[in-house]
Image (cartoon, rainbow, N blue to C red):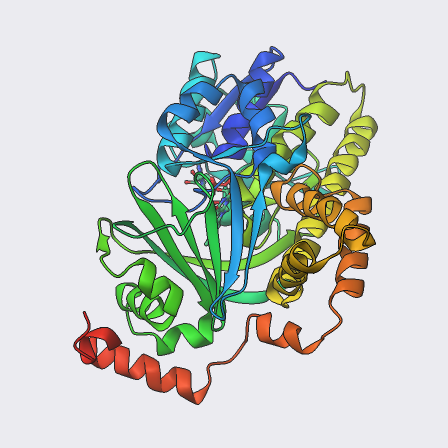
Length: 455
Ligand SMILES: Cc1cc2nc3c(=O)[nH]c(=O)nc-3n(C[C@H](O)[C@H](O)[C@H](O)COP(=O)(O)OP(=O)(O)OC[C@H]3O[C@@H](n4cnc5c(N)ncnc54)[C@H](O)[C@@H]3O)c2cc1C
């Protein structure tokens, strides 16, 4: 039923789907507005992407440009830290991932699609709104058809929105969405001489900050450092992205120490950060893919995986089957939407543990059990099981498993006896008077160390 497809957007979701379709012999054209900046977010991948990179035949190329990643860690300024080692999976799953230079990663995907014979149109796609069988839908404009060497009689059977957070189709068709609770702003840059504070090879370290969190992602030659805080708090850190990033680093003791000799080697980039899921994923002749369908808080780095996985699921449900009519297509698309929503909910539930202090409190209890439990204690034997479940949850390998979520829920309920430690470990939502005074000093003197003659 579907013999040709037009994909709008050449990010990870669009290029991955284009490769899968071409592997099935389905004609495919990708519109690429070629707007990729020199620095992009999406630099840390979860291990669940590895099987997809292998299926696309690009793992070796990605390995060449990237830094291997063996785990992740979450820590608090108060000294608490939880480490997740991917090697705890056992042998069935890849126990590593990569930290990637994102623009080059996208280029590798695009080259792979070209090798497979996908046609790229270097232009922004333009769409017309039309009504078919009483339903509002979209068609490529005459100008875009021409750019792709097509005409009305040869236009594609299906349009895919892979425009990321531009959400082109949703905006044109007024599709409503569900927003998450956060409204953050992120600033990041690449640094030399900024310690990543990793304890495992390529380990990504997340630090809970006042009103937000930060990332340290070790890449091949530099460290990517980003801060994410709520939009209200961001204003106090300075008027420009550069000042905010610097002030946020100086304001946090562990970050300040890691970056004491830092040398910024890129511009500071800014992104809005929020969570969103569309209320509709498909309609007559169109489907939403990757971020254009929904995106999760990036704290655990699920974005690129979710973009690639959406292509895997859509390919499996819609293009792998010989669908005979519109009804069967609708059913397959509904199943795709339901799976993507499950993924989205699973990540969101997990990320809540990081914001509200449960994950760090669990980490504290875990260390306590390792140090204190007697040889015969039940906790001593339960601890490695819980650690493995945690690693599977954060890696994407076991994020959707109800069993893993239940084990996490049960463990936090039973291990965190002292509820006051939750408060100490949570990400606060307001800046205190002390914070504001400290930030003011930083803004005056550049660094409090300089002020004290320590720099
Ligand atoms: C602060 C922050 C940090 C993040 N960190 C991570 C991380 O560490 N790890 C991770 O996995 N994810 C991370 N993400 C998320 C990740 O970047 C995205 O989830 C991922 O890029 C989504 O891929 P996509 O293909 O759906 O969309 P995109 O990567 O946004 O690609 C969409 C493409 O469509 C193009 N386009 C738009 N409109 C048109 C048009 N009209 N015509 C033609 N082309 C068009 C765009 O130029 C772009 O190339 C982060 C996100 C944020 C906000």
